[in-house]
Image (cartoon, rainbow, N blue to C red; front, side, top):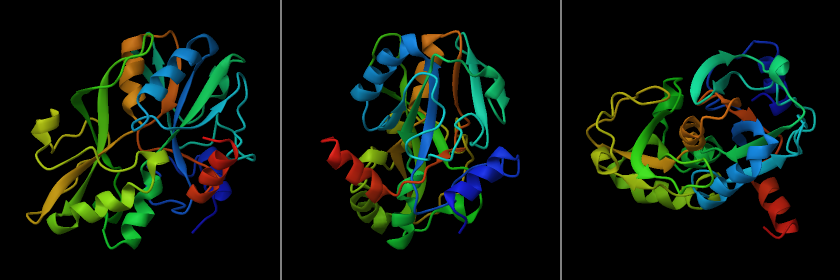
Length: 263
């Protein structure tokens, strides 16, 4: 297994431009939101109101692009792919955002469920998207997120097929990771949360759900992207869904940091 630093350098050099699922399994991966300072307080409030979908791992000061969680990294170059939103519309996808960077940008790193996937695998629960080398399937639901300032929208969830007899086990494993979405928000009939076509995810790639399996859904850090569309800000930058930032922290490092800070 490559180190986080090596994987980030591969992304910086354009050698890895796809999903980070399965990479550096012992280390925290995060979602990314970058927006102007004058909207950061509202976004922080949105995240605080939706902690299951938007658990903030790190909020970086205005203009700073080197995170505490990865001191050798550059947040402008070290993800496989970025999304750029202008006035509430997806304007472009880029491999780096150096030319767009502004001194008033505030960066939020938000917990990602890729972090608990190693625990699922170690617990005997295979993950089909990793086996098939695909991006995890993600869906917009009809469950609304809590609003804050200009930010509102639906809860977005990630889905993993789990054998019927292992659903409770998967829930128990992931509940131990509250800083990266924790336990599932739903299992079973996707229509109960407004997903009418499980074969057509809104983000990521579809995977087979076998007869002895049920779809299990976890809150997803792509939730802010839906809210950012509704906010219609002049310029916002996020990660491409599934293309995460890999930190130098393990989950245990995060817990120790939070304990020191009384979080």
